[in-house]
Amino acid sequence: MKPPCDCCSEHIQKLNQQVSVMRKEIKNLRQMLDSSVRAFRKHLTSVQTAVSRMSCCKEEKATAPAAASPASPQTTLEQGIIQTTPIGFISSCFAMKNGTPRQPTVCGPSRAELRIQQNIFNNPQHALLGLQQFSYVWIIFLFHKNGQLSCKAKVKPPRLNGQRVGVYSTRSPHRPNALGLTLAKLDKIESDTLYLSDIDMIAGTPVLDIKPYIPDYDCPDVRMSLESQQTDSDQNIGAPGDLNTEKNPVKSDEDEETDAPGNVTEINAEVLPTKDCCEKETSPLSTQVSAPKHLQNVLKEVEAFVTHIDTCQPSCESKNQVSDSAKSKPAALSTERPCYGVEAARWIRQPPIASLDVRFTPRAESQLAEFLPAHPSGAPGSDRPGFQFLRSTDEAASAIRGILSADPRSVYRRTRCKDRLFFFTLDTADVTCWFGEDFAEVLQVRPVQSHMKSY
Picture 1 (cartoon, helix red, strand yellow):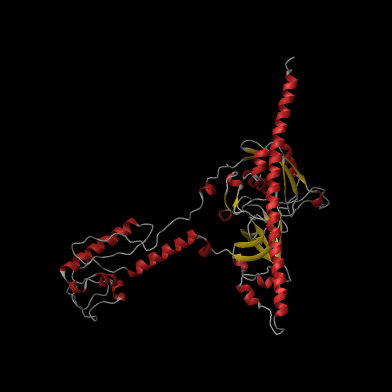
Picture 2 (cartoon, rainbow, N blue to C red):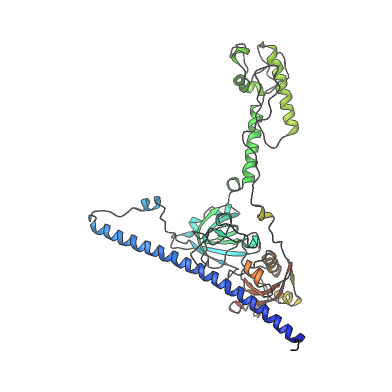
């Protein structure tokens, strides 16, 4: 029997590769089928439970007296049973999930509009009164494009490249309650419409609530800074005015609490200076107070200790503690509240996936340059396509770079479909690109047919 030729061996190798790929696909389909069956059984059980509860409620209503009143809204709210109504729907530059940034900081030029519905308030603009004083707002919305209601306790974030973590340690949209939270920049407010930027929501997203972003309450770094300033001011107010005197030693409240009663001579309250007198160096004491020698030594140590604190300026302020013995040394700093930095998981700042370098082909650059900004100043009657939200081609290019540098592909596409093209929609442009080893290249930027404009 003759050995197979080179051409036959190549065909055999390709067939073997295709067979292996088909086996993997079949395995994935089986896993998806198993998960679907489990989800179906779970939903079936929940439906059966709901039906049984309904039948029980009907029986109770039939047996209950007619005068029985239904549960009040307050009782329903206390039981955690709530019914939400969207206050508005997002109109953004992202029309599909594919290519939408997973976090608002990924794509800064992204823009959106939110109009408050009139079925919530008769005058929606009244509900927005005063919100223009804030530059950022929290948007609480609903993940309405999940595709399924089931959720898992462990998920695979794309940023971890397939590693499993708990769903509550991530911002996965697949959650028991499909609620989302994003921090958006508030550009302006016109009547009942909010103009937002730095968003990560697709068009049609139901918004449940809006809250202003207040750094003093929402940013831990600002809170710790304010607490540190408050501690500094408290220490400056409570510091003694002139400790460098042996004839007129002034005793602070902390000294009175820490010193033993037997080691301090009784001093008439009329002779002691008040707090205002201590702060003013020009007002001398009318009467000299005689104090034990060991108390003077302690006050000298306190003076040296305070001078050392002012020189070093530690990050965490603390109060001075003085011992009740002349032989004892100054006490160490006792921190009332530990100053810890804001901590986050290591994979947030050091993900296993590096950011990608984004390139544009000359064809893509020329196609992108054909788009007109959202508020064009060109001549009327132009057949060129135009953006609806983006204000310039540079802003569009920056948005495309931000989206692709974060690698918007799923783990499945990243590992199983490396050689396939990737498509996403940005504003009124359809973007086609492909991914290399450590880069992404934009091949073409074409206008969406439904958004062709004539100016």
